[in-house]
Structures are given as C-alpha cells and as structure tokens.
Length: 159
Length: 425
Image 1 (cartoon, rainbow over the protein chains, first blue to last red):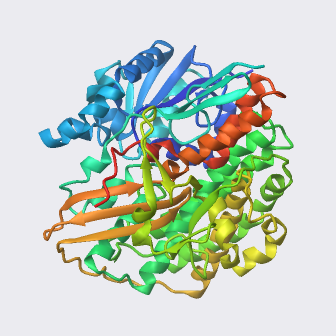
Image 2 (image 1 turned 180 degrees about the vertical axis):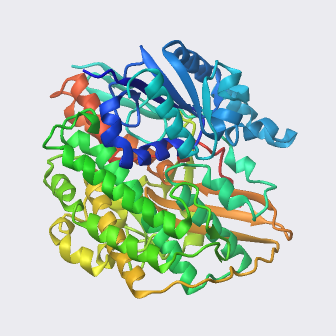
C-alpha cells in the first residue's frame, strides 16, 4: 500500500480565508489527494483528529496569546515540517494590527487583553517556532501552496 | 438523578474556534456557555482613521468565508452615507456576487460540515461508496459558486472588483455563457441533498423569534427588516431595537431584539419570505417548501439548500437576460456623514454603521454580525435539548446531539469574535 503524506491543518488568530481556499482547492484536487494524502488533523473537516506523527503541519493565523503559543509549540513537536499559511501567519497582519494601535486605542482594549489572557504583542509563527516553508498572501497564494504540497509529496515519497 | 458536566473543546466542522460548557445538577440544566475562543482582532478600533477608499477591502479580512458579505455591507454603508445611488447594472452585479457567495458558502456547510451528522459519520472523508456522490456534488456546487464569484467579483475570497460606486471589472459574454452552463449543470445535483435533509428525522424545535430582510423578491441585499413577531422596520432603525448582552465568558457580545432572543439566517429568511423565491425554485422545491415556516433549527440546513437553488435560478435568469457593459464607477466625493448598511450574509443579518469626516476618514463605526445575534438563542436551544434528553441519553450521545445542533446554526466564530463593543450613537 502506498505511503500517504500525513498532514494537519490548523488555524490561530485570522479570518480563516486560507482555510476556505484550502476547502475550495479540494474541488479540483480531492480525487488525486485522497490517494496520496492522509488528512490526519483537519478540524474543519473532522472531529476525530490525531496530532502525533504528522509529516507536514499547515498553520494559518498569527499567535495572539500564550495559549496559542503553547498549542503551536505542541504542533511543532508533532510534525516533521511546518508551513506558515497566509499573511497573518507569515507577517502577522492584519491580526497584529493592535500592535500598532495608538495609546488611546490600546487603552480601550486593555481590559480585554487582560480578561482573555492575550499576549501584549501578536506574533508571527516564525517568532515562536521554526518554520520550514511559507505561503504568503491574504488569502494564501494557491499556486505556491500547490507547489509546496508537491514538494512534500516527493520529499516524503508519497507521490 | 444525574449530575453531568459536558465540555467540548474546539468544536469541529464550524468556521472558527468555540468551546462549550454545560452543567447539569439533579437532572436540571444550570448552565450553558458557548465560549468563542478566538482571540479578538479589534476591527472596531482598527477601522478608525482608515480611508473609505481602503476600508471595504480591510473589513473583508474580518472573515474568510463571509468576506464578500462584509465587503458589500461596508460599501452599502459608505454609499448610503455619501448619498450614492448605485446603477442598475451595479445592483445586479452585486446580486450575482452575493449569489456566488451563497452557493459556495452554503454548499460548504451543507455537505462538508453538516451532512456527516445526518449519516452518523465523523467526516465527509469517511463517506462510503454510496455516499461518495454527495462529496462530488459538494465539490461541483462549490466550484460553480466559486466561478460565479470569480467572473463577477474577481475572486471568491476577498473579491477585488466591487467598489464604492460600482465595479472595477466586467464579465465577458463568454464568461457569462460558460457560467450559465455550469450553474445549469450543477443545479440537478442539489436535489439529492435536499431529499436527505427533508427526510432526516432530526428535531431541535423550540419557539423563537425570527428576523430577516424581506421584500417582494427574495433578496440578500435590499428590503426592510421583518420579524416573525410582526415587526416591520427600516434597516437604519435596527440598532434602536437591539440590546447588547455582555457574555463575560466569551470573546464576543450577544444580542437580543426587542428584549428577546431571536434567530437570523436561512431559516429566518425562508420562514419570513418564501413567497419571494424565484419561480423555478418555488416550482421544483414545492415539496420542501411546505415545511416552512418551521421552528426546527435543523431545518436551517434545508433552508440553505433551497437558497442555493434560488441563487442558481436567479443568477441564470439575470445572466441570460442582461448584458453587462463597461461602466465608470460613480465618483466618490467625501463629506461628513454617517451611513448604515444592512444585508443578509449567509448566516443572517449583517449590520454596519460608519461615521465619516469630510475627507473620507472613518471616525468610528459599529458592526453587528449574525453569529453574535444567534448566540443566546443557540444557548437556549442547547439548554432545551439537554433538558429533554438528560434522562434518556448518555453523556456522549447528548454531546453529539449538541454538536449537531450547533452545526445546524452554521455559526461563524471568525466573524463573531473580532469586535470590542458597540456604542450606539
């Protein structure tokens, strides 16, 4: 039986636009990918997910709390490659817009930052864990994403 | 007598992240808390000092799946404030843009999120050979909705062509022809899923108020607000009837309407305005339409399916009967003003109020999204469901029923958790 590429898809602070683009890419690619890829941890598609032993974790969104950072580190520990997906994951924006708020705006949101234990600054994935690849864009650039999927299918000999 | 604590972390197959906590003591449900756990992105603050030139594309980033709804509602609020009346062609192109969103977004929810619940499967990925056709139907319908968005608005997510005052690009005759063919082809695929939802014996009935835009024609962009309790108001009056409810455990506020909980979304629209559906939809969905009005939240799924059909039928009619020509957007001349936009996003009424200065800079604004409006109603429905089953079903069975109920609402947490507060001015 052919070895499948075990992938996970995760999201943090973002609009999940790249997650939507991912579900749209399934329209054309599912029949091929279902033979080559095991969707091991994809919350948007299933409840019973397994984190351990992922080949590639695709991670959308920026890191806005300690809880998020811990989760991301847990994902990193359980995957061989981690790919930052979309603008928020790659350069923080627009999720990190509160980093550049003026003092008045910062004062207004201060109580919520405390109440929900959010971090003082929103961070990119690379500021928290090692990132092996990235797909920029808001939403992600589909062509680059497909190239990276192909690259890892070959690297993990699933193709 | 049962004491049960139910905790669901990171509910699956919904847009965004939410947890749930339920506390039952001596067979009585004492607490139901839906916690929107996504970290806020504070768009209510971030829109201030932005130019009306860039604001629509910025708020589009509030939500990936509803991005077109945010874009069009923001444009409407700016235009209403500035006194811009869009041309007939612009109105039709916006309608088609919205139909593309409805087809793509509802198909994602109906087939990929909710249908596994009807088949007692975890995921579409687990569908057997008899069910595999639904997956193919889902992809075909989503693709057609995507195509419609792309030829009219440039892209299905964060569409670049819709502008304040008009459009930046216009579809060619070839694109229109090919899109009509595609929509006609996928239309037939929808009926199998409609049958599945029609025949499913899942009941989450509880009486509530429903609220939606309604007019003679079934419309996602224009009309007055109508409620099932008999209220009929203009969109600009909406805030006067809303009450904000702070939910300290959730990263979003909830809302009541006229002091009561209520539901917005496809079920509300079908309950309040099924007579306005396209004639071909009414003819071919006759059997399913008899169900409405309904207080069964599970029928929100069937309502979404019927809306896909309406979106296809009306899109085909528009594209077959109209020709689209190059048209300069109406000039935008800033002035100090306030504008209100209210449209029906896939999940229900979406409201924008924007106050602008004379140079076109946003002074402040409010945004009310559908899932915030449904949150308290959802919690009451969960309470009702748990109370009904607490003596008969296991904790695991009840947990699964709760998840199915939540998915029937099709909540969008990405939208709901990105605002600070609303101060009605």
